[in-house]
Length: 181
Image (cartoon, rainbow, N blue to C red; front, side, top):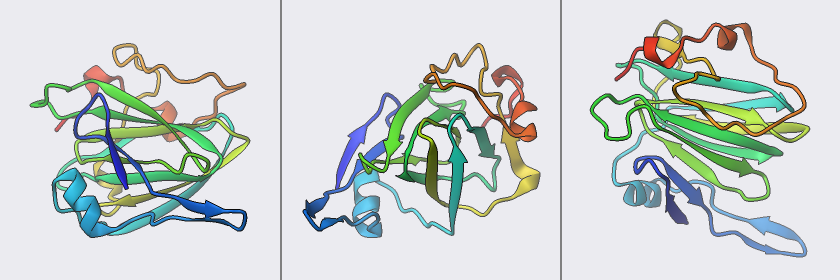
C-alpha cells in the first residue's frame, strides 16, 4: 500500500499493491493495521455505503456536524469519478481549501477524508459504483450541504455533457453560510 500526500496534508490518496496476470488481479483493499500506521491515527469504521450514479451526477458537498462528524475512506469500483474534499476545520491552515482526485476502477485509488471535511463527487463515466466506509453513522439531523458551485471555493469540476443534482444538493448553502468545525 502506497500513501500519497495531497495539497491538504490530512487528506491521503491510497494506492494498493495490485497483483495481476492474464487471469485478473488481486489486491488488499483495506488492512486496519497498515491503514492506521500510514495515516497516523486510530480509525474505527462503523458503516459501509455503496452508491451507483450515471454520468453527470454530482453528489455533495456533504458533511455531518459533531458529534456525528464522519471520516470517509472512498473508492470507485466501476467507472470513474472526480472526488473532492473541502477542509471545514477553522483552526486548520488549509481551512476553506479543497483537493480533487480522479478515482476509478482502473487506478484502484482510494481517498481518505478525515472528520471535519465536506465531500462530494462527480460521475465522469457512463456509470460509476462508489464505495465508502464511514467512521460514524448517518445522522440526518446533523447533515449539512454546501452548494457544489460556490464561488469562494471555486472548485474546478471536470466537464460533462450535463449535470444532475438531487433537490437536497441544489439547496446547499454557500461556503460563507456553512457551519464549520
